[in-house]
Length: 423
View 1 (cartoon, rainbow, N blue to C red):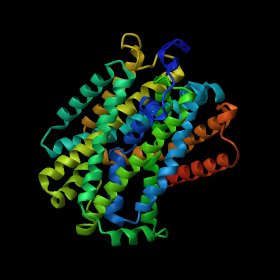
View 2 (view 1 turned 120 degrees about the horizontal axis):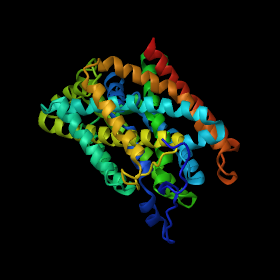
View 3 (view 1 turned 180 degrees about the horizontal axis):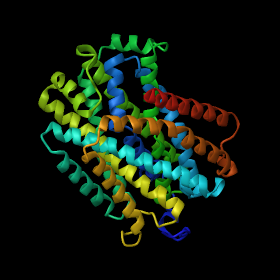
View 4 (view 1 turned 60 degrees about the vertical axis):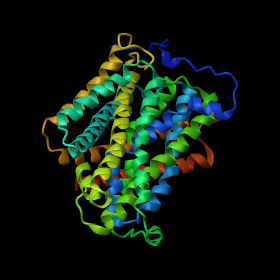
């Protein structure tokens, strides 16, 4: 691989736009925030939300609302860093802290990406099994589809496909509405949070950990650069991130409400460790045929958009410390390493899922690893916001203190969930 950055690669070019109303500008800029937020509600997050509703009813519903501003604050920093510096997250770490720290950060990112892909492929396999489709066919079809998506060599086309797929997750919102949740029970749940119960605290921490993923920080910063955006697009990019944060948490809340309304009332002790178990628990109350169809659309939307985002994150992240060309504007023969890493991450995740390893034990290990990575990822993000941002957009004053507390609390909950998972 080349060792120096090619400053003429397409991701360094700025998207020049004529003066236009803010709403038209937003339509051009929208995408990176919405895509990464839809990917945030992946198969693992859906399982956490379902477990929360089944075991604790609506007692974790308020948390889903409180997590919206936390999610926005963290991802808005990645937007600011990308738009002002025109560099990816790994590049900035190398520039301000040295190559060694950059390699450490990106190496753990790669492990995290492969681990996350295991969760997505497991979810895809689970959906396929609902309809009698073998794991081999489900995974092979997914890998081929993912390769075809990026083979278009256009960031905008890949982004549009990801958004359209991710919007299937809104099926969870529709199902939650028709499940007729009890307003009285919901109000009681919102007002009663048993913070002294260790089981409740574990799920609370798991929900926090499910919101901030290590790969989200890398993806959104690389995406705004590859799209050709700059600081003039900051305001619509912030709206893109804010709307995405509201949508992803609405989906999480819908899954929780759906599980609380059905499983939480009828069978609160149901096992919910896999996609198959969630579907089996839900469909008797929703109707087997349509329940499975709607559930499959929502889960596939979540798993597919997450697979695209995570694989691209791996390819972008490794390129940021090695220097190979890493833009979706390049054709495969122009940026062979970028596309090779993208495909290799897909094949590695698919191969492990099909190998017959114990996916339950593997999933626990992935959850622990991602949780323990949060202090590193969020720590670098905070330090870069204090050091790498130009003066007008630098994190400072009371807001810097507030963001520091949010980062500390989020990372702390992530480590707590990880340690509980170990012991």
